[in-house]
Length: 398
Image (tube, rainbow, N blue to C red; front, side, top):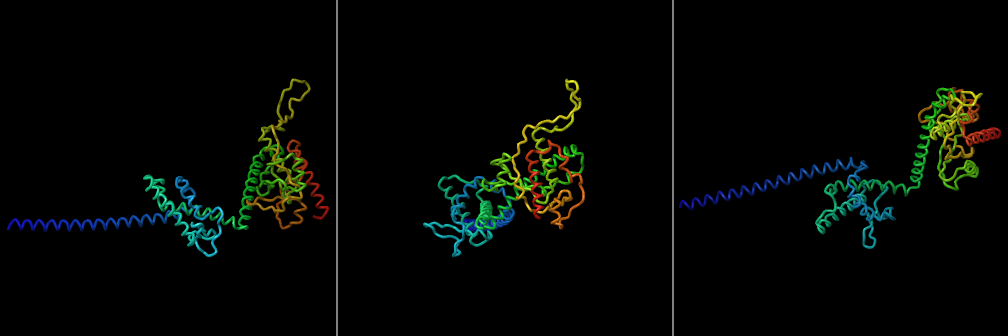
């Protein structure tokens, strides 16, 4: 009948609609999966890219401060880092201690070593799983959304590993410990040299004004200065200990170690610059400057020399005994000219390979022209002692 035909037609249409809807859903699901794969691929590519670049970024941990206290305990607990730093002899990544895995990363090799890769993956999994359990138990996240990302956790984990690996490698290598110690000492000494050199340069204008000479700044170089060395009690030789006591120095003072090649006049020149700087620092900048002063007493000259006493010229260093001078050759990192008047004549005779340039003749007899207020008493005493020492060394053929 007509009604049956209509019902059959409607059934066919409904079936077609359902089929089309199912097909559309399948296509939508496929597109969704493809889109998801694309996003995953892009995310993976970005992760790889950021991991390589972020490895050298030191501040990533500071960008995720809440993540640091979560990673750190796991990082150290898994390998018992407080007392276990050497790899297992059997080559395994970990050993079971009281039923717990204790990891032994390969600190001396690269981070992509198989054992190290397993260890890093373990830390990442622990961080991730702990957050998942936390969410289930407390229905609220412990980590921020920006922290709860595999690439962020991975980058921070690798950063921790590299830093710790470097420190442990140093601790288990005597040569590396010695190298690091020397590097730190040299860095500190270099810093002190640069500070003193800056002080010397700052004193040059007044020096040249007082002594009427030019170009004296050419004599100053960081590599031509004394060493200012910290020391521990009991390390000083008997002679240096007496120097320390004589100059009223104690704990916290620095030992000044001179250079064998320098002439007495060059050392005196540097000491005068030291004294000028100390006067500047203490507020006695006008010492030795002639001023007009009208005195009420008849017979006094209206022009006389006024010496302004500084507030405090106390030194926090003392000179080591001349026998402790350094034998380092004069070698300037800035290729500063080495004038003949800067070098001890006897030393130069024994080291003819050292090239010097004629010049700065005013320095040759500089000690004779030094004004009394331009040289500290302890500096004068040291220069006299050094002169006597040099004379004895020459007489003995040294």
